[in-house]
Image (cartoon, rainbow, N blue to C red):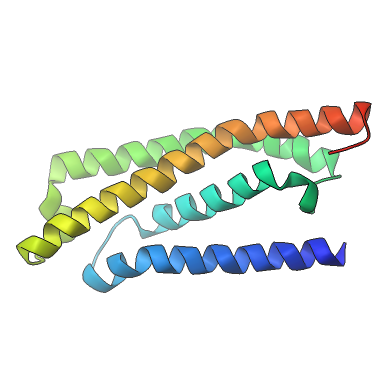
Length: 152
């Protein structure tokens, strides 16, 4: 059990580092980016949920059936929330334009920055949504295996 807690802590540190590296260009170049928090949520959700999908036997969640059932039902509102926020970002960019997102950066930096922001938001946004769709299936399979085969 101690090893699983240590591994979980290491993964959270790695997730924080990845989020910091991904958001660093946005933080250093833009003064008032309105989508920091949802961007952080996308990154954390994508990495954490993907990790639970692929490495479930090596997590603290492996033998906790009640927690798995709770997570199955929590994924439903999470999918809607994440989808809504991605739609709000796209609507904001479409209606307000590139200038509202990148401000008054020089032209060369403006094009590369909006491309970076859009690609990064959609990568982590769609990744987190798809991960939240797949996680309940993985958890149901894990519960079934636990009851019928004694494995995760």
